[in-house]
Length: 341
Image (cartoon, rainbow, N blue to C red; front, side):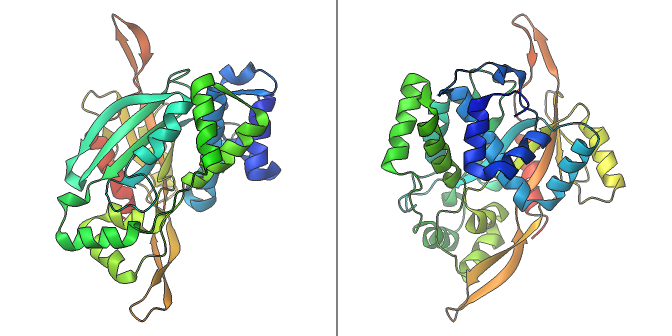
């Protein structure tokens, strides 16, 4: 790792392999705060950073457009700064063995030092978003934006299809992993061996936990909610990662000039300090169960890559980065997975 932090190096390499670790280290900024570490004892902030690095790498494997952009930044001698990652959940009682909604992830984030940083009603798309910031270094360690879809806001046919899709969800966390989460939440650290075990388990949480959906259910859900259709095929995978850049409008113009599949406008927060745009979602091929019971494949929207600029706040409390999100921005960015439908 560029910081020579052996804890981070061991964690990431053991989970995604030497080649993956070398790639993510080459492409992604590792904050200077990780230049200090305790050999053999992994702190909660190191676990949080390692999880973000693993998930960033996983998304690049699925998003060719984002991978190409990131490689181009590295070719110019730079690195991207991961601002936040996003995932989607379903707040529904018939969720199989998986805890409903965001609770499947707050049980992960809170022991790693994350705390609620904002609540965002996404009424236009029948969801609620929440941001979580890592308390040890909120400006340097990527936030998580966790959204919940509310099936009760949709039709009865939609709700029945949601149940058929998510009722088969499995619990990705073993009792051992849950115990390790409790340990790091209580003691703020784990041994390297235990941290590798936990990080491996946490990576598995950011995946689809339910069985192959039927094509009929997918079409029912897609007719009312592009977001639920996305969850049906992708589950709790990272929906997007985000490069924090100095001037998001300039980045957008440059990418549009390269004829990249880019959002046509930049979303600006109500306070004017947070600006966001994104590539359209890359397509992925997923399997469905057809009416006759056979497996069929369809190209559907996958994940995407976002850009954000954040201004400083200057007030009586001092100067700090505006780490907030904005309801209008979020709903605009969420359309990136609808655009590829």
